[in-house]
Amino acid sequence: MPTVECDSDEARRRLEEAGVTVTPGNTDHERWRAERGDATAVAYDGKVVVQGGSPTDILPLLEPGGGRAHVYFDGASRGNPGPAAIGWVIVTSDGIVAEGSKRIGKTTNNRAEYEALVEALTAAAEYGYDEVDVRGDSQLIVKQVRGEWKTNDPGLREHRVTVRELLDRFDRWSLEHVPREINDHADSLANEALDNA
Image (cartoon, rainbow, N blue to C red; front, side, top):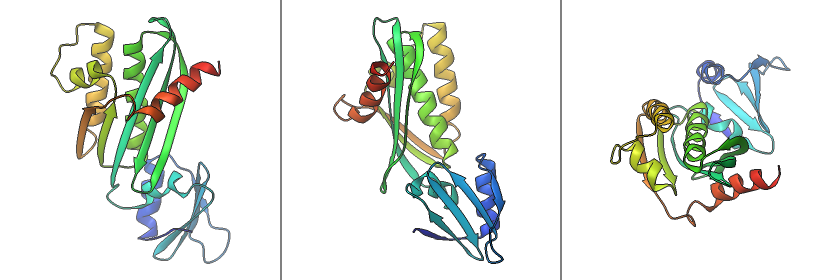
């Protein structure tokens, strides 16, 4: 069970800011409890103990400074436009912290890529990271967001503005294009969401 040495009142504030419900402790020694995903945080004086099958569901929110994460995103569309889905993964030195995928209706591949990036950055912000290194296999999205290519499509331009606003929440960020094989987990998640329709 991971133990975070911290001010439990400050940890509680971070959890509540992230939208996590904090409840009173079960014993006289417990200051409070909080659950997120498959993790439960139990606060004592000067420390928080994390229990459950997936401690990383809550650990990043407890640690001051937020830390650094690698974020991978991918969107998929069959038909372009056609049925579409997104996938994203957040990875730290502890391994995969979070991942997600879902169908997003009928749209183009580029819009799906942008929606995947928005979801991934939103999740990274919710987990409290203050530095993100973002990776995707869509050269178009990467170069548009970095301002190297124009964004002529009005819908994509809106997505680009949203992505830049999300990136500005972090103290430091990078965005790089990577080959599909480097982005295979996010790619698999998006395609599995399409296959499981």
